[in-house]
Amino acid sequence: MVHIEIPTAGSHLAGLCSFTPPDFSAGTPVVLPPEKPLLVMLHGWQDNAASFTPLFPALTDHFSLLAVDWPGHGLSPHRAADNFYHFVDYVDDLAQLMTTLANACVMPSRVMLVGHSLGALVVTCYAAAFAERVDGLVLIEGLAPLSEPPMQAATRLRQGIESRQRYRARALQREARPPRSMASLEQALALRCQVNGLRAAQLRPIIERGVYEDRGRWHWRHDPRLRCDSLYRMGREHANALSRAISAPILSIVGQQGTRN
Image 1 (cartoon, rainbow, N blue to C red):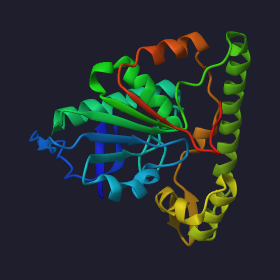
Image 2 (cartoon, rainbow, N blue to C red):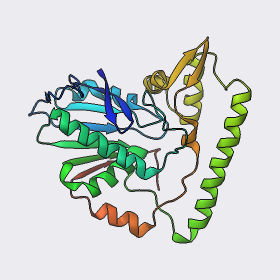
Image 3 (cartoon, rainbow, N blue to C red):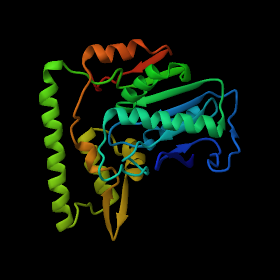
């Protein structure tokens, strides 16, 4: 696995890849092995690219692999201070990523997207809007954009705005006192295991990429604004129309104890 930073408008996306990263400023493209399809792997909410590292050894001989940190996750920068994390902005992030890769690499004939949870919802929207750029989808614990009945729109908007107001109030409090932290990486791992119900060995790569140490204390890397509620969700007809626009074959994977709705 090799660290990669892919330029986007005013920022970049960090990630891990199985090939030699291109020099995005040089203008000399990297030739990806034509016999290996490219798998672009997008993680879930508050996870990071290390979600997929356990799969790399089994897949590297057959695919060129790229796992990316969404903005505000892992090693990717947070969004600007006046921004939040609207769902459709992730689709734009992915579109920028794919365009930059296509300009910097000689791509193989097949490009497939793998998405987990939030990542699965984003890649379905991208594959609907840019069907000609996607040759296959693997969707883990997610199949279509989140939707809700139109009569909930006003409540959704209010809840989203109020959650932003609460975030701003907490941000002012954080300026006046030290931020919450953990005594060790192991404490962070134990906390995440308690929330997710997974084994420490399964979560360790995600936690190691998702925390940093400062003066003997450990802090989460992800942006606290990620916890703010959405201002808007699609109606079901809107979400279904996007799903119908996908032309690529889809493999859907749902765990026995995973998301059911």
